[in-house]
Image 1 (cartoon, rainbow, N blue to C red):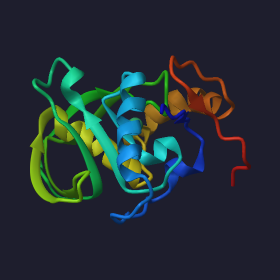
Image 2: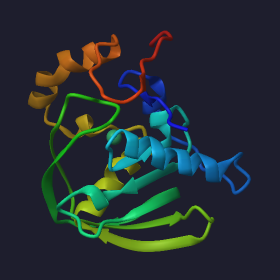
Image 3: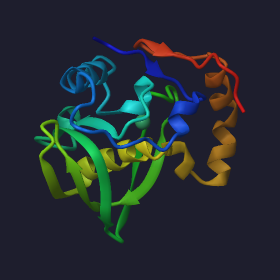
Length: 185
Ligand code: NI
């Protein structure tokens, strides 16, 4: 099943997501569907809040990015970044929840992360380069943070109008999406 992607302006994207347990309903199907949703939208990462679920789950598949061979295809449950390198690098990012906006973001080159895989096996692993970048972007999502939050005040000001347009449903995307209809605080 392909989920519609939640667009910028939906409060679910700003929530700190909650840990889940092994008995989370239909977890295997959810993870499968998240990979399917991500691939259908040509994304390299997708976090559960982006399909409207404020839980600490994200999937990544960086194998389609030229820069990352052979790439990392994995699900991350209840992840916690425990170390970040001091070294940072800039790379252009986009987000399925923020179509039409891309910009360079500075992030640590290497991270150490604890997480559970789709079978709830515990991992403690180090990632670097593109994989580390995609993981950090998705990890931000389960913390209620978006890549645009990392931009300078000047850049934020430049994209302000575009972001407002997205909240009003002026969205151009080649995949199914959902604009928040409720009241905003
Ligand atoms: Ni994103």
